[in-house]
Length: 450
Image (cartoon, rainbow, N blue to C red; front, top):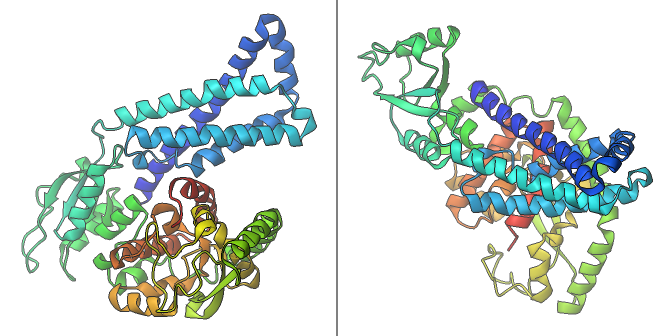
């Protein structure tokens, strides 16, 4: 699905370039409005003497817009969704710029100039995205042909119908040959076909040879599971078999990839820095737990790490003592086992901060599938296909499933969570590591913990 992915990347790049341009133009307009024609040139000259500030502002803009999911039009379900995230961007952008100008003395431009720049740029960026949301529903030139049937075809159609800006549309649906009889490609014009999605073909079917030939001639041919994964960021575990994981060739080199070793270094550095920076919050939270419900402050629970090895996960205790006397169960909304201050700690995921120690020990990573309890994992391994594949990497403090899904409690939810986890394992690398970290803050703001 390289071409589908390339289209998504072009869209994100275009929006990022538009944001940078809007921000720079808004800065010039703000200087003109604030200082007039006589003071504009001196002020502009002063700003241009500090290109580091301009780069800092553009990088902050890109990072925060990524955090709040403003570069993926396919996720903008409604205008309200878009405006809520734009408002979060405005607040975070203001704080980040203020921090920057006060930490670096030469960047100490007027607060009024910064406020006016944001007042001009953020609404303009919101308008650009609102227009994008409106016009993106126009039919796309790119069409797809589906061969075969099955639940995966319905799932693909549902995803495409729900998106304001789908990367392709299904124009034709051809039946699969029965017992090798019939040619679904007989009346297909290869010059007019950009994408063929194969949902159902038997082993040894001669149609496979025809599809391979078309693929080499420039027509993109993919299996339906691969198309669904590229579209949704999750691997449909009930629509694939073990051969599919082998055929992709993406899962065999995780332990030997250069990033596998670099990730451990990044984890150590980031966890050490975060532990120092959040120490005051962690100490204050620990004292609040102690005063609110007494000892113990730290809750220890057995979880499964890489290759299924057990380890002791650390959290600030947020539930009343004895809450798991009958065995641990998943938290529910407004769970009455959670005591007063515990709700606040869970809301902002402060109770997860002790897991930075687990990262330093090498039991966890910053990014990876969330570790599960052995008894729960054993149950899911019986019910959900390929559940144990998630143990191929270290579990994480945050992960691809966490930034895409709310809290999970049902088996169906955990299947969806696994599908996201396996997609992240397949794309294990610096890009996935960075995008998950950036989007984690957005997930905390818009999907609080229970």
